[in-house]
Image (cartoon, rainbow, N blue to C red):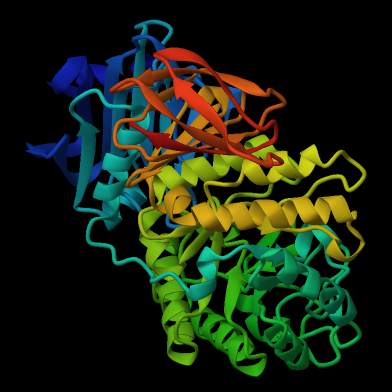
Length: 578
């Protein structure tokens, strides 16, 4: 329907490679097309509102990947596929993935700050895949040019995402990773929700440190009126003294226990019960029904000054090591509305204030951590947070894996964290393995009442975090290869140097390229004790394997194909020889 609904008879079409074409209409004019590496760059002059349309062969399409991909709607029809983007919501990038994991069509737009919407999907009428970007009046006012990038050759879909992401991040300096960004986290959120206190935190702190965590994230509930899962009282951002009589003292005790402290804050929310509300109410014209509070409009200098002051005060007064800054996308409710402040566009205002907050924190506490949560993942705000975290998915290990892999494909300089990991403490210990192994290609955050957790669960969490740390450089810094997104990435691999880590999340065929590999590590997040494989590259390969629970190594030899014995719900390390 996209091809029928938007006056495309007036669109001027230009052919690119592999049967892909793009069209422009309205006040859009093509300035030129150039090849940059593996990518064709189309520069479009924007004189007034209009549209940019892309059409590509549908081929053997299996899924359409975008930064907030969910396999529940893997390949939408063109009357259904919609994804809004802005500085604090997703990013204008997409890849059509075929059943072999190749990118039939991969594109991005450089509209990273202002709000827009991509329409996309399979065309019933044309049997093609169509994407449309409307150049609204607001976007036209903010942009004189829009650059479209299309990957020219067919690549593995994760490689195509990477090519486009590198291009989108070009010229954007990343925020240096804080010391604790690369260390496991203990989060209070799923463990206790808003029912936290000094005593609760300090009961769990030594256990968290003992299993391998290096920081505690004091989540929602530390603040005055921080009860009831609603936010009518937020805005002052001072401690609830009934829970934390001496919050700075709590932080000092955590530091003494070998743990750094990061605090949650939603600074754009302003509740009517707060003392700050009367002075800021005129800058909070949007009421959020789902949060039951008002949202500050960052287009006013008074709001930005308030936000920077609040964040720096918290860091200073409580000697914090970082902030988890939340509920940023609610601000986009102001998009497209008139501004009475000094900035017209909400996206521009968000990049301005988040940059000011990051600079202020750096000046006060160099090396501090700032965490943003999915979907605040645009490259436009990447310089202002060294950590991006998967969106909320309590106990959903598969969604945690999907989200962290999606973020890993998109992120360039930022460190990806899992959503805090939780599970049923009465479940078998294999549950702990599944939850943690699904987060292994990110930095794990754990959120359980550790002080009352069964000993077997604590021991398993400690074992896995020890294994994760030993593999961290490969898991986070290696060359990532993933399975099909519509199948929830059933196999994920990462290689760094001569070490290859292969993670099986379903009992699927492992495709192993062992050339130059001296250590093969298999993460088996299945109940199977043997996994099928195919070897590419030179043969034969032999070596010795050591699985979890094994008391001695055993000989292993790889043929061109076969089965490899592995530890169910565990990790097997294989040292290879020629």
